[in-house]
Image (cartoon, rainbow, N blue to C red; front, top):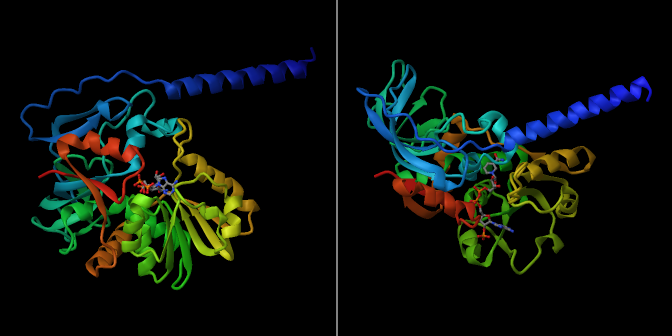
Length: 370
Ligand SMILES: NC(=O)c1ccc[n+]([C@@H]2O[C@H](COP(=O)([O-])OP(=O)(O)OC[C@H]3O[C@@H](n4cnc5c(N)ncnc54)[C@H](OP(=O)(O)O)[C@@H]3O)[C@@H](O)[C@H]2O)c1
């Protein structure tokens, strides 16, 4: 064998061994272990933890140190949180590729939860925006499923809770509504009087997307099942397509913006439903594949985008204070009213995730801590 073939064969073998061992490492799941005892002499609180990857069965409630607000932070007594598909993915450690950042074998951070609403209990040095007793809502650094959460106040993702919404409604907002708002306004570039189709209109993101699009003056078509058609109409859709009876791909209508939460169709198939200047915004897919899961639809969109004569965008929502305040104003004026499907007690948070995993929530799933 010539030397260059020997080198090529050796290089290929090395690549194969690296890929095989890398994929085995990503798939490895260490057994669940008990957490360390709560440190003596410091105030503790109850928090949801997962010390291994797995189903909601691996969730536990533990005593952990109660946070002390650092300079520029506020300590919030949590009154309600909401559950997102994000938490189900984090719990399972799937898609596996996410373990490169969330931890190989076991989660590097055992805490969970982003969306919260509650009451400020204490403020750190230099906090001017909030005072003890203020009702607030926001997005945490994945540690909101607890009795208390400490959050950066100045330029952090926290805002006063509008008085006309409950803690549960406010907790329903951050991740889902950021996603809906940024999909329509920033990535879809939606303008008044335009036509928008929302595939997955009845879910957590979808119920915000329908209301926000309506608030922007768009004509909304929602795709959902028979069971959720009345809800999607009630929150502002001018037209509803029941996916159990009709394939929305076969209609003759053209849309300026399509927001897709469900997937299952390639961007090329969506092309005929878009106006010449229309945009397809891929938010997620129902794909439960272990390696890429919902990322498959987003990667597919990015791969198609350069070859399409329509805009195709996939994105990850970015939590930020300006959008939270914008959403608070939409709630204050009654243009957005968070839709809550089910409420669970803190001790039953695992059941909330089990329900969400079924993929048929109509609105948001919230957990209360009272
Ligand atoms: N890119 C991002 O930054 C980002 C952020 C948040 C979420 N996401 C992703 O976006 C997706 C939606 O999130 P979510 O919080 O809205 O989830 P969700 O609340 O669990 O949404 C479930 C909804 O999907 C609907 N649905 C199921 N199959 C459908 C179909 N074939 N056609 C139309 N609707 C269907 C269900 O309605 P029926 O019961 O009526 O079937 C249900 O209302 C997920 O994949 C999530 O991972 C992405």
